[in-house]
Length: 394
Image (cartoon, rainbow, N blue to C red; front, side):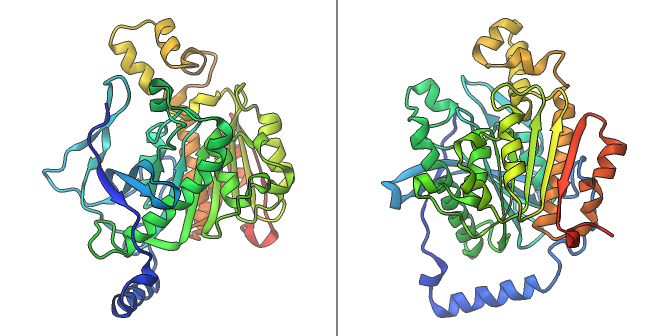
């Protein structure tokens, strides 16, 4: 079960601090911003492999006093410089089961790069912050700070506890949760007393999400007119994985003005490609849009269903018994579905490349985002791009 977490209340915004402290922080930010965020490291790392940075992991609780003390149990992964005594992370799942990591070190000191991009990840309905550990660890190893909140009222823990709220309420809560997490992560970076001090560059923020989290990513960029939710202007790029885009009006999708990556599976019967990927692909016109449909990938192939299922199998449960606990285990983790490790490799390759290109501005990642590269190297990916001429490598 969940181990005790440190409670972190909402911090004062930077503007309320003393002018001297604010000036010092601004000067430090400008000095660091003048140098490349990736100075001293390889400029281009193969995106489908672990990156050059060690990974740290932490877990804490955020409290949003402006929403009646709404609490968000949140995990964060970040580039780290682990000490000899730092243990590998052991992720608390559910029902007392745990998943040990071979990559992330628990509470390891943050390392370079300074002022790295921030990515907030939004899990699927009834999911959790750990549902896509492979992607969180991969992004952190490539130099991103990644924060993943549990959307209270819409998690696997709520399902077991009987505390789930209606989906309509979660549709409002989720984009607000993401914006609040951005607030708090930027506040941590601005706080000289915080372990993540000066680790996040405020204008380099991305959002990724799976399923209902894909809706959340789209909503944070385009807003939700019917719910009175406006876009968060700090978000500079989004990735929607098997998104539940049918929850958004075409006007919401049309309002998206930041680069968008759409990632889906042809075996997905929960949020099928048509219309959940085809709608935003058709409607979003202004920014660069990328689309990868993975042949044989299921809806849950982008999450940790097979990892959790393997733990249960190790405890002696049959496939049928596991499927009763973990919905879609058989359809996701057994043929004819595409092997989940291949789904995760493709996902990591594209999303690391996308965020390195559109948050870090590293055009060398264009090679992995080109249709020609997919044709030559990814036979199971139906890949399309729509970019302005200035975004296409010459």
